[in-house]
Image 1 (cartoon, rainbow, N blue to C red):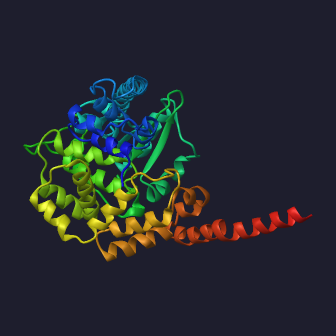
Image 2 (image 1 turned 45 degrees about the vertical axis):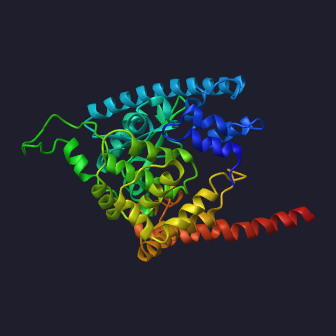
Image 3 (image 1 turned 90 degrees about the horizontal axis):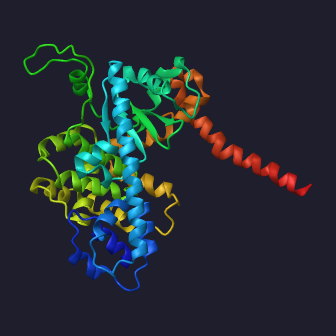
Length: 401
């Protein structure tokens, strides 16, 4: 059962929260600090402020509204600074003939919300062609960004095989830029084909079929691609933040019409159909997001969607948000995969696919990738089985002397 604060939070996040709808939800024993904590955890404080600022006094205490206003102003200023930096970085990359597609962050705030201040984000995400990622990273390194691990140029090919992005951090500002050469980590086997984008942005054919040699340009994901990406990302992270569901609602309720035929085709082709349906069902149930009849029928026809959605809703407001329940989340994600074959492949990838930690300690994998599938189980066994046993034995012996 939802608390007063949780009910008010969800009402504030609807597409058109009105004072006469919110006021009856505000009770004398409302725990305002708890509402702010929930808003911070779910990264939706700007939306809470926008919903509550027009509530007549004295329903919302002035100190609470002042705190929300200060947070909103600070976040708006930060978002504008990051938006400016995004444009600067894009200009730097395109000047080096690197095609680039910004996504999430400021781009999503403008596309889905129509206002840069309405969505919080912590970094800037950029997609570049895989064969230009190394140059893109070097451009940022030359601008004062840095990585948190050693990155020899000779090991780039190995890194790109085991990961999908590289985070960089600004030496002076409190933000980062992530250079992606794939939307999702290869461990998740959810490929998005971006080749048509790169063809167009790198001087492919125009509508008349002639070459366009003006050089690499900035592009955008289509709304349909963005929707599938958001649902896939949210499912992968157990929908731990309401912000991701609000993104879906705003994307579908603001702006131009969306092609559901294209959406369903993209989701099926990337092994993300059930993730898509789950995200849409959650957004529909929590915020009343309108869905077409075909999608509603597909949701009803998949017996996995309802229990998955219930699992998310029950755990939207955990007692301890910092506590991770890895086994439950792994099982949840497995059930969200489209088929039994996808589930089997996912388990194998979880067990054997190398991570960046493997890449850092096992250089031989750069020359023969298959060796990672031997190295990783050995490393995990030593780290999580042998090391605790022997370190515990030594600690025990030391304590008895």
